[in-house]
Length: 257
Image (tube, rainbow, N blue to C red; front, side, top):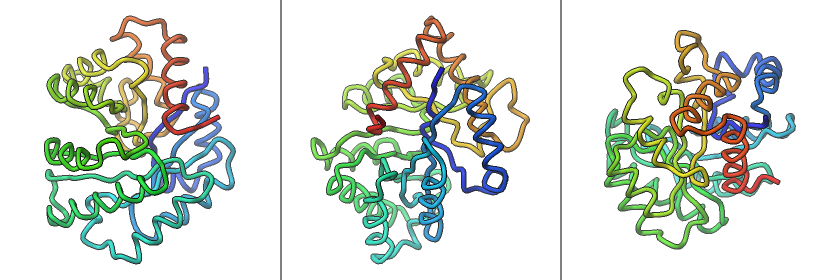
C-alpha cells in the first residue's frame, strides 16, 4: 500500500519538532507520500525547506482566507516566486471562509482571485478551502473556467446537490477523518457519490483525527488509513484496490511521478 496524504500541515506545532518520527509512523502505516500545505506569510519558506529535506514530501502554497486581510502585493509576488520551486505541486489552500469571517469578505474574494491568477500563470492545480461560502466560491472558480489545470475542494463535506455540482464542473473532492465520524452520514454519502478518479484523501493534520483515534492529538498522516478504510467500506470496494486507485488519482492530480 502506498497512500498519499494530499493535505497536511507538517510545519504546525506538535508535528514539526518530531517530524522524522511522524513520517516513519506514516510509512509504517502505508502512507508514503505527503503534500504539506503552507497557509500564511512567514511560513511558506519553511514549508519549502521541509520538502527539500525529505523524499516524497511535496508542498502546496497559499494564504488561507483567514489571512487574507494581511496579504500584501509583495506577499503575492513572493507566493508566485515560491510556487515555481520544483517541489511545489499546487497553489493553495485558498478560497473563502464565511463561517469565521476573520477577513472581510470582499478582501477574501480579491485574494482568492489573485491565487487563481497565479495558478493559471504557473499551470498548477488549486487547493480550495470553502466554508459557508460554497456558491460564492464556485462563482469565482467559474470566472476561471477552462483556465485552471485542476481543482480540488479540500476537507470535503458537501451536500448531495453540492457534490453533483462539483462533479459536473470536473473538480476533485478530498475527504478527511470527518468521513469516519458517527454523525457524518452526509459526508459518507458524498464520498459514495464521488468516483475514484475524482476522489482523494487527506488528514488536514494536526486537525480532524479520525475514528477510532478521534481523541488523539495531534492528528498525523499515519491516521489517514482509518479514513481510507471507512471510505472503501462505504463504497463497497476492496481496501487494497481502493488505496491503489485513490493513489493513482492523487498522483495524476499533483503530477507526482
